[in-house]
Amino acid sequence: MIRASELVYEYPGKRALDAVSFTLAAASITALVGPNGAGKTTLLRCLAGLDEPYSGTVEIAGIDVLKHPRDAHRHIGYLPDDFGLYAELSVRRCLLYAGRARGLADATLDARVDEVAAQLEIGDKLADKAGSLSRGQRQRLAIAQSIIHRPSVLLLDEPASGLDPESRAALSGLMRKLRGEGMTLVVSSHILAELEEYCTGMLVLQQARIVEHRLIEQADAAAVRQVRLRLAQHSEALADVLGGLPLSELQIDGSVANFDYAGDDAALAGLLATLVNAGLPVCELQIEHASLQDQYLLAVDVNRGGRA
Ligand SMILES: Nc1ncnc2c1ncn2[C@@H]1O[C@H](COP(=O)(O)OP(=O)(O)OP(=O)(O)O)[C@@H](O)[C@H]1O
Image (cartoon, rainbow, N blue to C red; front, side, top):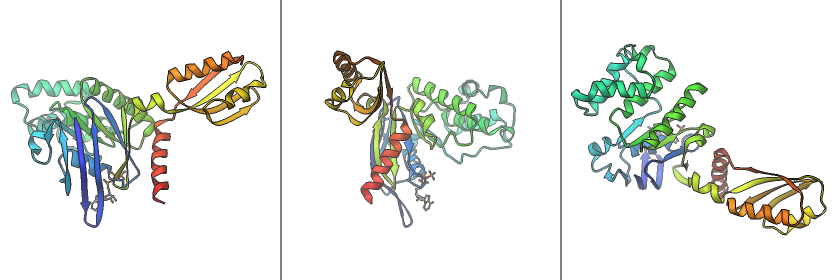
């Protein structure tokens, strides 16, 4: 659905994107993460066809964004991080304006404005001036404007910044809903704990380059997991049995053992069977998954280490 190939973008004296390539599947939500200044906003603007890269190509819904920007824009919704609203216009007029700018026909526009306002839960604000809305309501209006033309791709730059926990939870729900309707989303954010709730993939940008592209659902199956094992009572055999298994970071403290284990659920079931068959009185096996934040920090750290 979204394909970037060998993108290079330069500001005067500064390379902001360097040979950036990736493919994102339809109906996915990709977290675009990276340190400040990594190039996230620049990448989103190139994907949206708002900035022209020095070289490389962007394809969205099968359309070459650089060659056919107008066609591509029909498929793209874009929310910039510093989005502006017409403060003196009513919410309804803001949405009507956005719809007309996107070429929606007058005959259907009113109904679409009501529909999208209800979807973003600002239906009761249609008569209010945009300038009178709270930060969260303004954010929802800006998102409503960006999806009024029913794009198949939505690019959101820091959509959760400045929102309270309640509004951020509502935003998470909205993204899941849009994905459920078949939309493909790319979300740049620094709030990794929340991205984890709804993202299907993570793209890590560092110093203008992609350093990691991970599909979260797939990565989970074979990811290294931290395991905590507890026996009902102390057993001298614990160290011997665990010592013969393909584990790492093994630490034993009395009847409790902690270790890292790489394998899917079936492999874990086999591990448990081995322990029980060896006569160990296992009463607890607890698995901790590496969080998105851990994975991100690891990707960024490894890359820094590689460059040092
Ligand atoms: N108009 C500009 N002129 C010159 N350099 C720029 C311009 N805009 C961005 N840059 C530089 O390009 C690099 C990438 O900027 P970009 O805004 O894309 O990063 P970002 O990952 O979105 O950062 P942040 O997380 O802080 O929003 C940075 O080093 C930035 O200083």
